[in-house]
Length: 389
Image (cartoon, rainbow, N blue to C red; front, side, top):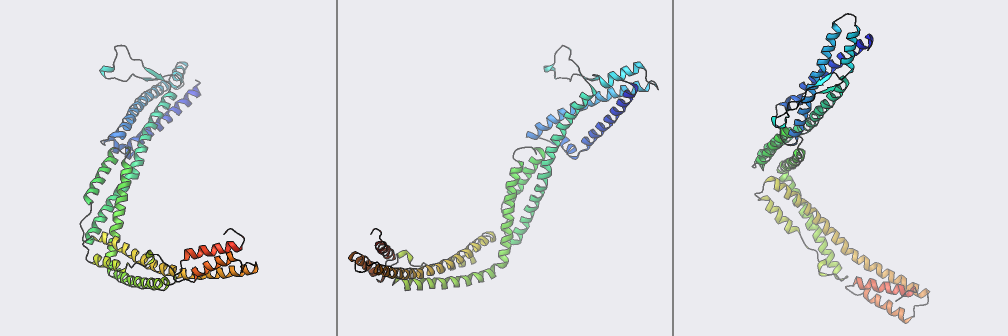
């Protein structure tokens, strides 16, 4: 090295040493590092941190050897104001050669040999590269652990808060806590796993499952409180809805009575009343000993059933009246086909007349068999249009 080159290299290495020292101090003061250093680890996290500690031990050994070389280089530089040839040669060897000596690590006695253990020699650049690799291994482990803690621990706090809120709501309802002790024990177990083995496979999955259960339970209890406060009003509304169901069922029965004399209906077309069944269910709900959570579900189901029963009865009445409309439509279609037969000169055709008469008799019979009548009209139409009979 030239004098200028040696001076520059020494200054650059001193800056590098200070930067590395700062990074190592930051590592040691890192919150996660401080926590995990005294934590009782297990599982995947214990294995990962053991590997990180091994890398950290190698890093400190490298750093000690690296700093020793720089101390010696600074001592050589301090010997004279103006660097001489011997000093330059020594600085060149220290700063550019394989001057970093790594002693062989002590091994357990069962792994030792009586032969001398070879030392490893590295350049300063090689030592820094190896330190950087070890540093990254340690910080990667810290980053992964910290990511889980940053995600899971606040969620665990939120789950604990949910559990406390659920207990408050249940007491407000005047009902015993449902599975609170089980959920509390589960959250304690998950927290212990999160602290001791954050990199384990089940921490986040278990927390997801418990958080869903708590969210569902909280929603149920909150709804139950609302239902408890609104029960009288909603019961009145339900009674009014049952009156509408009675009216709709009455209309369906009237429609059936009016239509059954005109249209042949199967036995299952007879409208079935549900209003008494729904009224009985409401009476049973009034005296139920169920929790308000269950009563809220039963009330909502009863409200839906009443609405559906009313809609179904109205739809049944409409469908029944629609059958009369279908019969009238077929009568009109038969008449139109007869006009077509006249235009085509088939009005006196015996076969056509027979088909027309069969359809007419079916359509003007009471009650009318719509299925057979529709088939007869279709057959007559095909006949006069030149299709197969």
